[in-house]
View 1 (cartoon, helix red, strand yellow):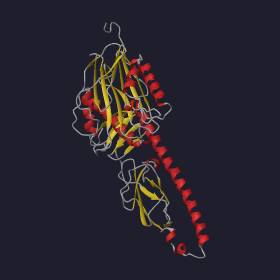
View 2 (cartoon, rainbow, N blue to C red; view 1 turned 90 degrees about the vertical axis):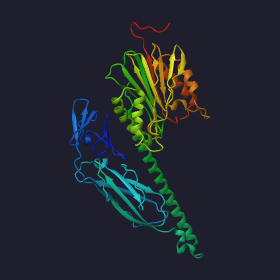
View 3 (tube, one colour; view 1 turned 135 degrees about the horizontal axis):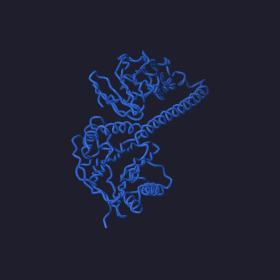
Length: 453
């Protein structure tokens, strides 16, 4: 949902998230929501936002203050010896305590350069700095998007290298003394470097944990129970956290049109997690506008294209199972072709028309295919993480092995486990390079329904 100030609001089972075009802000029950779980939202004429919760509770949100938080910076030393190792820490305080200290975001810059993206980090370490005078600035922003424009700044001087000092060039009387000093400084520098590396590793691990949590919260917690269908879905994340995503959509009020969606966002960690959250919210909105798979992709592309960077795009496949018409309508935006299995024979379902990934360019014309549903048919949807799984010597698992595994299995759970088992054997203990995500759907014969032959 888009508010009057052009910010985007997305409701999830973990609160409601606001996107201002640069940064995400998450509001939970501890921030004032009646409940964490949000299923509906509405924008009123007075500019206030209303959020509905699963138990019937309602939360009203209206921006109440334009007062920015006040930023504080731990005093820096006036002078630092070369190579300029410097640890900087900061914090802020919201004047009215509407935003807790732990939820405030910060941006910093050095010597008047470009401001960093807002993040909850309250420290930064410089391992080397050029000699001379420098200025460090930091500014806070609260959850309502009010920035501390003035921020706070500190000046610092990095002294020149010790080898340019007069005592170093004196050739007599101080040689041994100079060597001992050099050894001590080198030891201190090594210890500081190790501490800086340890802190950097800790920051990266925290970012990965946040990305893993975001990815897990977007995925279905269980497979749907649908008369006439057997369904299973799974995402096995890589250690670096990719951008794989899948979900199920009822397109006609839990009746006869079920959509399955599988997608892969470029990048890893937060670079992929944030576009995946954006895609999830836009998918829900697009599915309310149309029941046509190709049209859903078109709406998603037009919404994502101006909001994603030039190096960020999403490969997605949407397939609508129309049980009343016994038809499948798949549409493809850069994803792998679905696989159909019938009586042990497998084939890929290619879709004609434009198949560019979402977010690359505007005005892409996607096309959906019509595929009759027959009792016993099984359809498999997957991302490239399975196909590109590598053996210890670098050989990919490949699509031909996928087709072989599907042909030799019967039933959605059997197909899922066979694919994972065969891929694991192929990797031979090698770590996953990318997420492995797959969906399998089987048409179950109903009473009075018979297959061909």
